[in-house]
Image 1: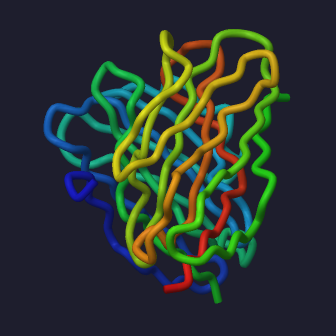
Image 2: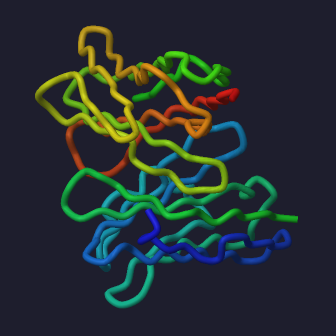
Length: 112
Length: 114
Protein backbone atom coordinates (compact mmCIF):
# COMPACT_ATOMS: atom_id res chain seq x y z
CA UNK A 1 0.00 0.00 0.00
CA UNK A 2 1.49 3.28 -1.12
CA UNK A 3 0.51 4.89 2.19
CA UNK A 4 3.26 3.16 4.19
CA UNK A 5 6.56 4.85 3.50
CA UNK A 6 9.98 3.38 4.05
CA UNK A 7 13.32 5.02 3.52
CA UNK A 8 15.83 4.59 2.26
CA UNK A 9 14.79 2.04 -0.34
CA UNK A 10 18.36 0.86 -0.72
CA UNK A 11 21.11 1.15 1.86
CA UNK A 12 24.71 0.06 1.55
CA UNK A 13 26.84 -0.19 4.64
CA UNK A 14 30.32 -1.51 5.30
CA UNK A 15 30.82 -4.08 8.03
CA UNK A 16 30.86 -2.43 11.43
CA UNK A 17 28.79 0.59 10.46
CA UNK A 18 25.30 1.40 11.71
CA UNK A 19 22.14 1.10 9.65
CA UNK A 20 18.98 3.10 10.36
CA UNK A 21 15.78 2.14 8.58
CA UNK A 22 12.71 4.35 8.79
CA UNK A 23 9.03 3.56 8.50
CA UNK A 24 6.25 6.14 8.35
CA UNK A 25 2.84 4.56 8.97
CA UNK A 26 -0.30 5.20 7.04
CA UNK A 27 -2.42 7.99 8.42
CA UNK A 28 -4.32 6.81 11.46
CA UNK A 29 -2.20 3.69 11.97
CA UNK A 30 -0.63 3.36 15.38
CA UNK A 31 0.73 -0.19 15.14
CA UNK A 32 4.02 -0.92 13.43
CA UNK A 33 5.56 -4.31 12.63
CA UNK A 34 9.02 -4.99 11.25
CA UNK A 35 9.83 -8.07 9.18
CA UNK A 36 13.04 -9.31 7.57
CA UNK A 37 13.26 -11.29 4.36
CA UNK A 38 16.42 -13.21 3.64
CA UNK A 39 17.14 -14.55 0.13
CA UNK A 40 14.88 -17.50 -0.75
CA UNK A 41 13.05 -17.14 2.57
CA UNK A 42 9.67 -15.83 3.56
CA UNK A 43 9.24 -12.81 5.76
CA UNK A 44 10.22 -13.30 9.40
CA UNK A 45 8.62 -11.24 12.14
CA UNK A 46 11.03 -9.12 14.15
CA UNK A 47 9.19 -6.66 16.37
CA UNK A 48 5.78 -5.10 16.99
CA UNK A 49 5.47 -1.59 18.37
CA UNK A 50 2.82 0.89 19.27
CA UNK A 51 3.51 4.52 19.98
CA UNK A 52 6.40 4.68 22.49
CA UNK A 53 5.99 1.00 23.40
CA UNK A 54 7.50 -2.28 22.28
CA UNK A 55 4.72 -4.84 22.41
CA UNK A 56 6.47 -7.94 21.11
CA UNK A 57 10.16 -8.24 20.24
CA UNK A 58 10.33 -12.01 20.20
CA UNK A 59 11.78 -12.05 16.68
CA UNK A 60 14.54 -9.55 17.25
CA UNK A 61 18.13 -10.74 17.49
CA UNK A 62 19.34 -10.26 21.05
CA UNK A 63 22.26 -8.05 20.13
CA UNK A 64 22.88 -5.10 17.80
CA UNK A 65 19.22 -4.68 16.80
CA UNK A 66 16.81 -2.18 18.33
CA UNK A 67 13.55 -0.54 17.34
CA UNK A 68 11.58 2.45 18.43
CA UNK A 69 8.35 4.21 17.54
CA UNK A 70 8.44 7.63 19.18
CA UNK A 71 5.48 9.82 19.90
CA UNK A 72 6.43 11.98 16.96
CA UNK A 73 8.10 10.83 13.79
CA UNK A 74 8.68 7.52 12.06
CA UNK A 75 9.48 4.15 13.51
CA UNK A 76 13.18 3.35 13.31
CA UNK A 77 14.88 -0.02 13.10
CA UNK A 78 18.51 0.35 14.09
CA UNK A 79 21.24 -2.18 13.41
CA UNK A 80 24.58 -1.51 15.03
CA UNK A 81 27.90 -2.90 13.79
CA UNK A 82 26.36 -4.53 10.76
CA UNK A 83 27.68 -7.86 9.47
CA UNK A 84 27.27 -9.52 6.07
CA UNK A 85 24.50 -11.74 7.44
CA UNK A 86 22.36 -8.65 8.04
CA UNK A 87 22.00 -8.17 4.27
CA UNK A 88 18.31 -8.59 3.60
CA UNK A 89 15.10 -6.78 2.73
CA UNK A 90 13.45 -5.18 5.73
CA UNK A 91 9.74 -4.50 5.54
CA UNK A 92 7.51 -2.60 7.86
CA UNK A 93 3.77 -3.02 8.05
CA UNK A 94 1.24 -0.87 9.85
CA UNK A 95 -2.31 -1.27 11.02
CA UNK A 96 -5.07 0.32 13.03
CA UNK A 97 -6.79 -1.85 15.57
CA UNK A 98 -7.74 -4.49 13.01
CA UNK A 99 -5.64 -7.45 12.05
CA UNK A 100 -5.01 -6.22 8.52
CA UNK A 101 -1.44 -5.12 8.01
CA UNK A 102 -0.40 -2.83 5.18
CA UNK A 103 3.15 -3.20 3.97
CA UNK A 104 5.67 -0.64 2.87
CA UNK A 105 7.98 -1.09 -0.14
CA UNK A 106 10.87 -2.29 1.98
CA UNK A 107 14.49 -1.30 2.49
CA UNK A 108 17.12 -3.46 0.88
CA UNK A 109 20.22 -3.47 3.05
CA UNK A 110 23.51 -4.58 1.57
CA UNK A 111 26.52 -5.01 3.82
CA UNK A 112 29.84 -5.00 2.04
CA UNK B 1 6.79 -23.81 16.85
CA UNK B 2 4.14 -22.40 14.54
CA UNK B 3 4.96 -22.65 10.87
CA UNK B 4 3.45 -22.15 7.44
CA UNK B 5 4.25 -24.39 4.47
CA UNK B 6 3.72 -23.50 0.86
CA UNK B 7 4.03 -26.57 -1.29
CA UNK B 8 5.30 -25.11 -4.53
CA UNK B 9 8.33 -22.91 -4.93
CA UNK B 10 7.66 -22.02 -8.58
CA UNK B 11 4.55 -22.62 -10.67
CA UNK B 12 4.43 -22.02 -14.41
CA UNK B 13 1.06 -21.82 -16.16
CA UNK B 14 -0.34 -20.73 -19.48
CA UNK B 15 -2.97 -18.02 -19.61
CA UNK B 16 -6.50 -19.26 -18.88
CA UNK B 17 -5.23 -22.22 -16.88
CA UNK B 18 -6.65 -22.79 -13.42
CA UNK B 19 -4.51 -22.10 -10.38
CA UNK B 20 -4.32 -23.66 -6.97
CA UNK B 21 -1.53 -22.81 -4.55
CA UNK B 22 -1.25 -24.86 -1.40
CA UNK B 23 -0.80 -23.52 2.10
CA UNK B 24 -0.71 -25.50 5.34
CA UNK B 25 -0.08 -24.20 8.82
CA UNK B 26 0.75 -25.79 12.13
CA UNK B 27 -1.26 -24.37 14.99
CA UNK B 28 -4.13 -25.99 16.80
CA UNK B 29 -5.99 -22.93 18.01
CA UNK B 30 -7.77 -19.95 16.53
CA UNK B 31 -6.08 -18.50 13.48
CA UNK B 32 -6.47 -15.60 11.11
CA UNK B 33 -5.31 -16.44 7.59
CA UNK B 34 -4.03 -14.23 4.79
CA UNK B 35 -2.75 -14.36 1.25
CA UNK B 36 -0.47 -11.57 0.10
CA UNK B 37 0.82 -10.94 -3.42
CA UNK B 38 4.00 -9.20 -4.47
CA UNK B 39 4.10 -8.10 -8.11
CA UNK B 40 7.54 -7.56 -9.64
CA UNK B 41 9.12 -4.43 -8.20
CA UNK B 42 6.21 -3.73 -5.89
CA UNK B 43 5.42 -4.21 -2.21
CA UNK B 44 3.19 -6.82 -0.63
CA UNK B 45 -0.52 -6.33 -1.14
CA UNK B 46 -3.32 -8.13 0.65
CA UNK B 47 -5.24 -10.47 -1.66
CA UNK B 48 -7.71 -11.87 0.84
CA UNK B 49 -8.14 -12.75 4.48
CA UNK B 50 -10.07 -15.14 6.68
CA UNK B 51 -11.04 -14.36 10.26
CA UNK B 52 -14.22 -16.38 10.82
CA UNK B 53 -17.50 -17.36 9.17
CA UNK B 54 -17.80 -18.71 5.64
CA UNK B 55 -14.64 -20.75 4.99
CA UNK B 56 -14.71 -19.82 1.29
CA UNK B 57 -13.25 -16.36 1.03
CA UNK B 58 -13.29 -14.19 -2.05
CA UNK B 59 -10.57 -11.62 -2.62
CA UNK B 60 -9.51 -9.13 -5.21
CA UNK B 61 -8.80 -9.88 -8.89
CA UNK B 62 -10.87 -13.05 -8.97
CA UNK B 63 -8.90 -14.93 -6.32
CA UNK B 64 -10.51 -17.05 -3.64
CA UNK B 65 -9.30 -19.29 -0.85
CA UNK B 66 -10.85 -22.06 1.18
CA UNK B 67 -10.14 -22.62 4.85
CA UNK B 68 -10.32 -26.32 5.75
CA UNK B 69 -9.83 -26.53 9.47
CA UNK B 70 -9.47 -30.31 9.59
CA UNK B 71 -6.60 -30.15 7.11
CA UNK B 72 -5.00 -26.98 8.54
CA UNK B 73 -5.09 -25.64 5.00
CA UNK B 74 -5.88 -22.36 3.27
CA UNK B 75 -5.35 -22.95 -0.45
CA UNK B 76 -5.52 -20.12 -2.95
CA UNK B 77 -7.42 -20.59 -6.22
CA UNK B 78 -8.23 -18.76 -9.40
CA UNK B 79 -10.25 -20.36 -12.21
CA UNK B 80 -8.42 -18.65 -15.08
CA UNK B 81 -5.08 -16.90 -14.67
CA UNK B 82 -3.84 -13.96 -16.69
CA UNK B 83 -0.34 -12.87 -17.61
CA UNK B 84 -0.75 -10.00 -15.13
CA UNK B 85 -1.03 -12.52 -12.28
CA UNK B 86 2.69 -13.19 -12.58
CA UNK B 87 3.93 -12.47 -9.07
CA UNK B 88 5.03 -14.06 -5.83
CA UNK B 89 2.31 -15.23 -3.48
CA UNK B 90 2.70 -15.50 0.28
CA UNK B 91 0.44 -17.29 2.73
CA UNK B 92 0.49 -15.92 6.30
CA UNK B 93 -1.05 -16.87 9.61
CA UNK B 94 -1.75 -14.87 12.71
CA UNK B 95 -1.98 -17.47 15.44
CA UNK B 96 -4.03 -17.22 18.56
CA UNK B 97 -6.23 -14.42 17.28
CA UNK B 98 -3.86 -11.85 18.68
CA UNK B 99 -2.75 -8.83 16.78
CA UNK B 100 0.66 -8.80 15.26
CA UNK B 101 3.24 -11.41 14.50
CA UNK B 102 2.25 -12.77 11.12
CA UNK B 103 3.98 -16.02 10.26
CA UNK B 104 4.73 -16.27 6.56
CA UNK B 105 5.35 -19.15 4.24
CA UNK B 106 8.37 -18.98 1.94
CA UNK B 107 6.28 -17.90 -1.00
CA UNK B 108 5.34 -19.34 -4.39
CA UNK B 109 6.48 -17.67 -7.58
CA UNK B 110 3.83 -17.81 -10.28
CA UNK B 111 4.84 -17.29 -13.88
CA UNK B 112 2.03 -17.03 -16.41
CA UNK B 113 2.97 -17.48 -20.06
CA UNK B 114 0.99 -15.36 -22.52
